[in-house]
Length: 459
Image (cartoon, rainbow, N blue to C red; front, side):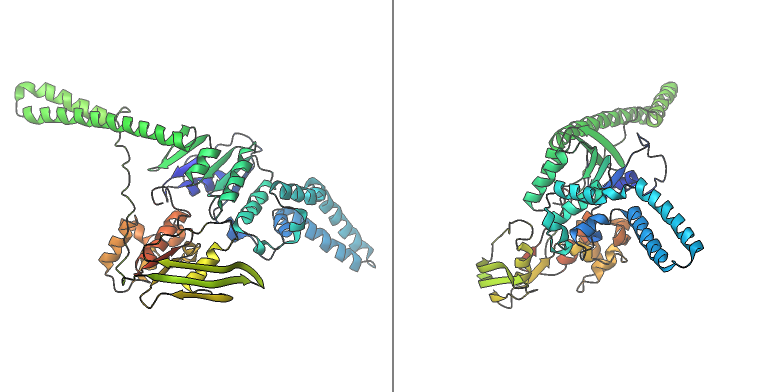
């Protein structure tokens, strides 16, 4: 099933409740089976990877209890070797080792290596990858590590929170195929409508604090939801029309004593309807469109940035070679390629964060002002500050009123401007990061995967 809805609508919170990470404030989470094993791939799973681990070591971190028992057995072995002249102490150590060995047998610790190898094969890794550092892998392969780690937990339910973020097209296609071949129920939060169309056979819509289920993929959900909302709005309009007509009649004849019994009867009918089970609540209204405009910047004509015979790489290995590119006013350029091909590197070179190994990258003049939205810009926000404080720290003389108006354009209104950044969803953090960028005038905009975490309307 796909779990959809606007940023901040509670999708990730629902996954955390389903996984047992959060307890509901009221009601219960009913499990259909006693042996239900739920594995949860969080949005931030990449941040939880230990980059200095080898691939094998990272997969082995899944076995927390197994690793504890293995360490305890090692410690006992060392104690045993040091206690050869103390029979009583040796007996105590051997007894502990026997207990630990029973635990190891129950945990099937002799199968860990084969289980890891099986999952590595499923994820498309080869044997020689086992000793590669996690840090050397691209985003798409790191996603496979995260997916492999939750499969090692032997789940019978999968929860995936925005698994396609930071993935190239090839990795998304691999993930689609892999998930469709799994005989496991799964709940997926994603803002990628094509991915939801191809993988999901049910959509759960989170809106206005409620959830509604629709059979079918995302495209069918859009049609069914429109039909449902149109029907709901029509029923609400008809009901309000009837109430208005009755209230108008009551107001017209309220001074006519001959109609007092009819007036009371109609008034009771209105009150009964409004408090009864058949009363149609007002349907949730679509939110205002996401709008923003950059502050004015100096006009630039002609070439803005020029790559001349440029090559760049790391540790003696070239990532991009002999690049000749020029960007002029009015250009809208997309960089495409697989994870690890050098797209983000080219952007960092373009904005001057890195210097090329060979050749040059030159701006067209002092009037060229570049604004750069990094891939992980939202992750760099201070979680201990409020939304408003985060914006105020980069403002350049804008009034409090102007900042509130700008935040309103990014759908932060009322008390939401005082929410802590740490309590925001991934999409809300992305909007805060975009809002910060809005306060700085520019005539060249460089965006590295700006739509990650954004819902359909924000995109």
